[in-house]
View: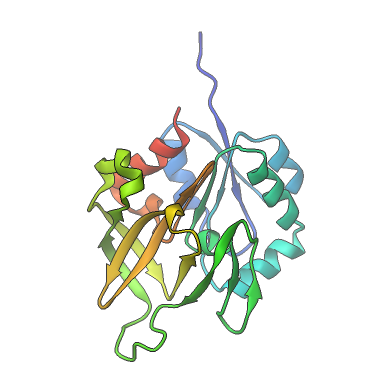
Amino acid sequence: MKKIKKKIMIVDYKLNNLFSIKNALDFLGYEAFISSDPDLLKKTDFVVLPGIGSFPEGMKKLHKLDLVNPLKNFISSGKKFMGICLGFQMLFQESSEFGKTKGLGVIKGKVKKLNGNKKFLRIPHIGWNKIEIMNNFKREVSFQKKYFYFVHSFYAIPNNKNEIFSLTKYENIKFCSSIKKNNIFACQFHPEKSGAAGLKLIKSFFGN
C-alpha cells in the first residue's frame, strides 16, 4: 500500500524566502506547496511560516492578505506549525522594531533588538552558531550543541521559560533561539539552510 504524503503549506506573504524551505521539504519527502490562500490553511496537514524582513512589514502583509485569523485558527486546531526567522518572531505579542507593532499573540512575550544597551554588539548576527537544548527537552539531546544558520537583528523573549526549546550565545548575550509549545515549533535560525542538522530537525518535528 502506497504511503500518503503529508501536505505542507508554505505561507507566502510576499516577504519571505520560499524556495529553500520548499526544496528542503521536497527532499524530505513531503508534499510541499506555496500559497497565500487562507482557505487552503483548512485543507493542509502542516504549515510553515517562513520569513525575512521587518516585523511591521511582515504583520502588514499578513493583514493585507487576510491571513492573521486563519493562521491563528490553524494553530488552534492542533495541527503542526513551524515558524522560521520572522515567522518565529511574529508569533509573539509585539515587537519594538521601528516602533511598537502587535504580532499574532500566539506566544506570550516580546521581540527586542539584539544589541539593546550593549553598545559593542555587532548586528545583524549572521552565520553559524550552536544551540543549547533546555533541560525540559532532554529527549532532543541529538540537537545539543549542533550548529545552525542565523541571520537576524532582533530576538524573542518568551514570558514562559518552559516554552524555550533552545538558547544560543552571541558574544555577550544569550537569547532564545527556538521555542516548542504543543503543536508549535518555531526558531530564529534557518533549519532549511543548516545542512544535515537542519533537515533532521524538520523531520523530527513533522514526522512521517
